[in-house]
Every structure is written in structure tokens, then in C-alpha cells.
Length: 141
Image 1 (cartoon, rainbow, N blue to C red):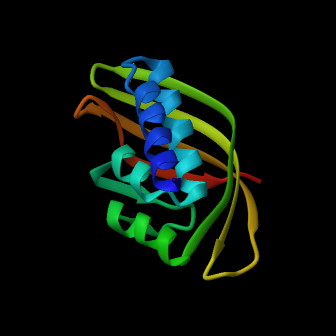
Image 2: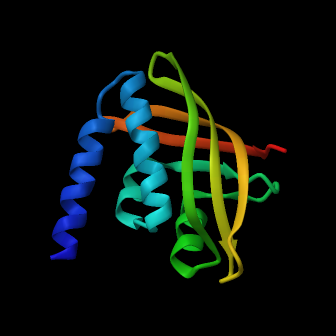
């Protein structure tokens, strides 16, 4: 039953994210945040491009496989990603999303660490949906 629910949720998320507009990018962004907190591998595999470059605020850089694997193994856990703001600029098949979010992460079962991040996500319209190709973040005071 939970697999069916996950599949239906994925289809709903991707349906909203498939809109080729700023609103579609924002929907994809919200789906990424939810899937990241939930550790939803199936949704992340759809939302993240195969050549993803994911640079964390501490300078560590993950590939798509490493990002998902870190969530699966608990090496990194996202407890929350709450967007405070999102701005989207569209350039043909590419969108640049600039955001500020309250984020809580922990590493290897450690205590959650709350931070406020400013980040840029680059989304590309490919395979009939928005896919994240790059993430770069920095900590705000």
C-alpha cells in the first residue's frame, strides 16, 4: 500500500512539476524539498538530473548518486527545508531559482543543526519535466 501511495504522490508531484513555467519550477522545487526531507529515492531520481552537481554550504560536493546514497544511509539527513522565498528566472529550457530557506540537517545520526541558507538551483527542462542540474548554497548569519 505504501508503494502505491508513493507512486501516486510521485505522479502528482511530477504532474505539477511538468508545467513549463516559473510556477512549474517552484512546484518542482517544493517536490525536491519534500522528497529530500522524506528520503524519497524514487522522487529524487526523477527530479535530479543524472549529471547533478550538488555543492553543500560546507563546500562538499555530491553527485546525484552520492546525494541519494547519503540520504539512504543516514550519512546526511534533512529534517526540514522550509522555503522563506523563491525567485525564478527562465532562460528557454533553463531556470535559475534563487531561494532562502530554514534548513535542519544532521550527519551520521548526530544532533540536528538548524541553519538559514541562501541557495541557487539550476533546473533544466528535459525528458518532459524539470530536473535539477546544480545546487550551491551558503549559510546566512
